[in-house]
Structure formats: structure tokens, C-alpha cells
Length: 186
Image (cartoon, rainbow, N blue to C red; front, side):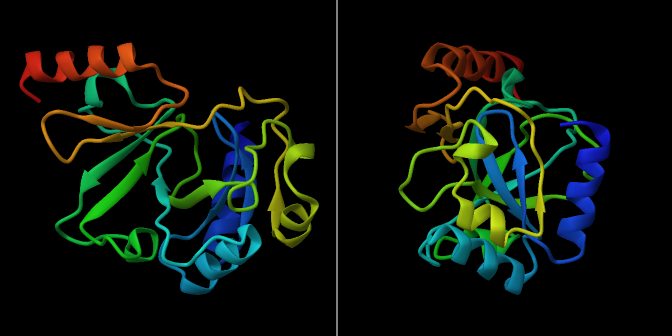
């Protein structure tokens, strides 16, 4: 995604819109994680059950990079004792799904889900995103062809780090990161 596309994504989300955009793995849908109307629209476009949680995606990164996994093709399930982003967490407010796919000047976090119909195949090209989603979105960004493998979902709520869904990042990479974090004491 170019810097101009990243800024357009941030502006669309800030205005309460829903955007189709190229993530690092597959095409995604994004909206303001604190705007109930935008979240409802995103879920309606996908046909996603309203109780199913979504991830919150960030495009900047502070030190403490989870053993080199971020930015990258992982979704991290983290403890959420402050219950931040309740519209993304839905029925499990104590857990936050977090993604940092790449660094870009979006300027804000977004609620993110893959740009497919619920249960449908992931979109690696914009043309793979269902027409109903593209037509209903407020912004559509074409980023060319993507790898097409969704993120690896890792549960970090316990020291053991459990892979919930295998995806773009291998088991070996996750284990290497876990060892790096353990060895540095972070």
C-alpha cells in the first residue's frame, strides 16, 4: 500500500466509512473500531455473525515486538483487562485480537476482517473480493495480487503461546519468536 493509499484508508475510517484494502496476506475490510454504525456495516457486508470477534489492526509499532513477529502475518490474542475496543471483542471483552501487518501512515487503528463473505475463500486479488462487498464499501484500494494466506493466529494469553490458526507464519517462526521473548525476559 502506498503512503497516499494509507492516508486515504485512515481518512475513510475517520469519516465512519468501511474500506476494502490490501493487507500483507489477503484483502481486508476496515472501519473505525469505536464506531458502532461502521462496525455494523462491515459485519453486514460480510454476512458475519455479530457476536464473532474481529481484530484491531495498527500500522505503527512501539518497541517490544513479540520476538520479531511484528509487523507481519500474525494476529495476536492478548489479555485485555481494560476492555478496550469492545466492538471488536464482542462476547469476549477480556481478549483483544491485534494485528500489525506493515508500517504505514494510516494514522489510526482499524477494526479489520478479511474481505470475503463469512466462511468464503480469502481474496488474494481485488477481483476475488465479492462484488457485493466492493459495491457496499466507501473506499476500495487495489494493491495487486497478495500472498493469499491469512494470518497465523497466536494466543499469547499464557506463557506457552498456542497457535489457534496456522497461516502465513510457520510454526517454526512462532517457536523462534517465543524463545527470543523468553530469552530476553520480555
